[in-house]
Each structure stands twice: as structure tokens, then as C-alpha cells.
Length: 89
Length: 398
Image 1: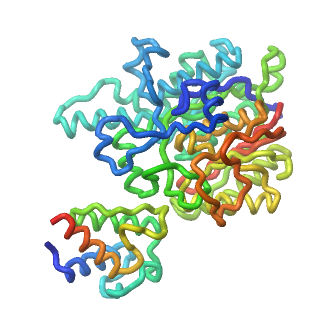
Image 2 (image 1 turned 135 degrees about the vertical axis):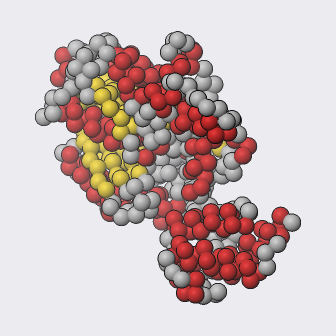
Image 3 (image 1 turned 180 degrees about the vertical axis):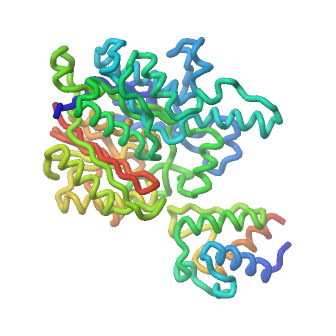
């Protein structure tokens, strides 16, 4: 099981890759809107998270307020991934 | 420039295997969306679609030919036969007849079957008919073979605008005198494991229902089938005493040249305005809009904005029929042109199903609940594709 720090590092790395930024440029408390991630970047990042952690993230681009998985900020994503991984255990 | 009319229509879709059944379902407000029944559907997270139900190709097509026909071709041939019969057109029009059909995925089930064979099952050969079954032009070519049409024949692929592009190009072929009769429309058989799996990845499919323009909409629901319309030069149709269903008034296309998936209302509005101009009409002439209305958050918001740009505060009644026949992708424009013919010929506007509550971003006069009686002179049918491609048809009373 990955630690919270490992999950955060991976989330930041995946977001940074989509944004063509260095990981150091994505703050651990960054908001996704502020980072400027577009809708395709978002679904690509979700796919990368699913592949990286072997999880299935419930996400529909048509629901701005996701009930099951928050995607508004780095901490929300980290918490969501951690929850899904714990659920698998 | 020759005027162009519609003298026959045919369809196979989730509502019915013919036009009368489809009209009846549209008027009754019945939806063809249901649980997916194909192989491995249990491995999908999206489990609904508008599949063609109870499809037995042997009922419609010679068994000896079936090895050559992917489902996409089967649907096109059956829809084409209905359109030709309704038009009363004989086979063998030769170089004065042609076919232009839209499809987004062509024979995708044939691709899937061959990949299963070589990758999953470890086989080293696939059916020798794999290429002629899967090629995008298979449906158009088989229609040309079946009906002896040796003029302009090809396929068009522009995702969700394919059929509208196909019909627009068919209109232009007849206008410029390259043909007297064109079978035009689209065919799609996307509903197989790989087809839905690919769409699933984009996260735009609804898990529960298709709700165009409604608050709480969760995306599109894919539908299969074909729609074929017999376009004919008006002078040719009148000379043979054909029954004219409607006139193909105008067509226009535009490209957003912006985002590969996100729609731009400016591009959509440009195509709508140009289609009106091509038809020699003004916005006030349009009595009904069959919207693209996919049920995604962004399409419906963008399309509603585009309609406001073109029609101001006086937009005519609007419905998306996708909650009935599903999003036919490359065929959808043909389903919707046929729904528009229903509006023109029967004076009934087909309803926008799946509606829960008004979305302030989609403030339109939606046809809700049941078909709405209305005598309309002209209708607009929109198609806006991924890739930023917009294609708009205007049909009118003959």
C-alpha cells in the first residue's frame, strides 16, 4: 500500500505531465482550475491515476460536482485515491 | 441550380426496423435505450445503449451475402431498400445515381473480431473477408451494387456529423447536375465491447439515461442503426410522378478550428446561419429545430447558446430525439433528418425525452412529454462533431 506522501508525489507527477510543468511547479495544495487543466487533460490524468494505482475512479465529465470523487484540488485527489486504495485492501 | 427533394426514407434503429415503426415510437415518446446485451458487456462500466433489438439479418438479406456484411452494412442495406421502395425508384439508374453515407466507425465489430482472434485467441489468421467487411465505404458500396448506382459513391467520416455531411454533399451532387438520385444518410454499429470501451474512456457516456438539455444530464447514450434518404432532383421526381416528402432546402458546414472535443457556439451558429442562407431563408422561416442535443453538459449548453445567437429570443420549438434513438454517431444525422421529415409531413414535432428539470443554461422552447402538433414550413437539423465540425441541414415542405 502506497503512503499518503507517495500518492501525493504520484498525483503531482501525473498532473505536472499533463500540464507540461515540472513537478516542483505544482503546489501540494493547488486547485485544478488554477492549474489550467482542460477537460481532456483531466480525463487523461484520471486514466494515468487508475493505471498507476490499479484503481477505478468514478468520474463523469458531465457532472461538475462529483459525488464520489473530488477532483477540485491536489489534496482532494490524493484523498480520493487513498480512499479507493483502502477500499481495495 | 436544380432543386432537390426527398422521395423516400428508410431506417433501422433501436426504435424499429422501419420508418412506420420509428415514427410511431417517436410520436408515442418511446425510448429505444436499454441494457446492453452484447458479448463482454458485463466488463463495461457503462451498460446502456440504444441497440437494434431482435435483429436477424437472414430475415432481410440473402444468407449467401451475409459473410460480406458487417452489421453496419446490414443496417444500411435494409434502410436503403425501404427508401428505394418508398421512392418507387427502380434499380439500375446507372451513372445518374449515387450513394454518400456517413459512418464514424465503419465495421468496428469486424475489427474487434479479428483482433480477438489474433491477440486474445492467439490465432495466426483472420477471415479473408475482414478488409471488405470493415472498410468505411463498405455500406455505401454495397448499396451501389444492390441498386446499380454507378455515379458518385463514397463514404464520409466526420464523427457525429458524418451523416449530415453525407447528406449535404449528396445535395450538392444533384444541384450541380452530377446525379439525379442520391441515396444519402449514415450507418453505424458502434455498440460492441471495444466501441463502448473506447467511449467510456472519454467519460462522456451517461450511466443511467439520456437527458438532452435537462438539468442533471450525465452524458450521451450510443445508438446503432442506419438512416437512408433518397434525394432526387425535383424535375426528375416530378417527371416520374413521384410522391415528394420534403425539399432539401439548404446545407452548410463550418469548422471551429479550436478544441478537438469542446464545442464552440460561434462555429455552430456560423453553420446554422449559412444553412439558412443556402436555403434562401431567414431565421423566422424555421418552425422546428431537431437539435444535436447529445445530453452532455457542454454540447447542450453550447448548442443552446448558438441557437440564441441565430434566432435571438424567437427560437422555434426545439427537441433532441437522441433520448429515443440514441446517439447514432455517424448515423445520427440521418435518424434526425427522418425525424424532421416526420415533423414536416405529419405536423408533429417529436418530443425531447428524458427531461427532468429546466437548465437555465439551456433556455429553449423544448418539446416535452408528447409530440407537439405544429404546421411548420421548414425545419433545421443540427450536427456538431468532435473535431469541431458543424453540419446543418434545412428541410422544407415541398
